[in-house]
Image (cartoon, rainbow, N blue to C red; front, side, top):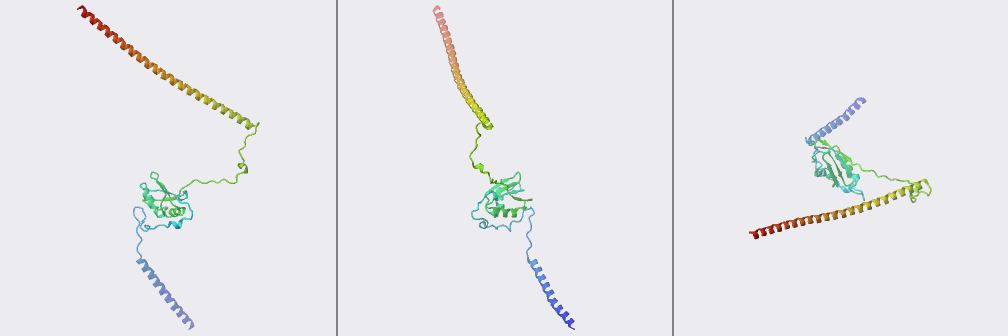
Length: 248
């Protein structure tokens, strides 16, 4: 008798639980039917940007006190760009992450660079825009490579001493002096050659000028002699004409 009562109590306890689960499933199914369908993806490969329009980032929250802006650390490499992309379109693509300080596009090779204000904003843009489809291509966003800064430490103390010279009489001193004498002799001879060439050039210019003047004088003399000869012939013809008239 007691076992029958226990079975009835368990049956009564399970019945409301099943009814509650069935009611919860009906509510969840109704909520799914009331939710609007997701927006379709455009056929040209671009993501729908209507949901991101108007979304901006508060730049004050991503700027540390005293942090330098627009440095090499916040410069991004953007690869696999469409060949017809413009600089204005590139800026608009990153306008959510603040104003860009530098934009460079190599259209022939399909890549570009853009410099954002801080490193944090560049990291956010890299995560969000990497592998994003744009006109049938997937963008590749990476940090631009920059030359490493080298720091030399623990130099020996002798580096702080003044320059050291070879001791007189040593092998280094002897050949250093011979090299010094050879260089000095070469310098003196080169100076002498330069002076000789300069003097020869000036002398040649003077001789050429004198020869030109003498040639002009000779041409003038020849012209004068020619004119005198013509004048003498004209006088002879005139005298002959006068003699003929007298004879007549």
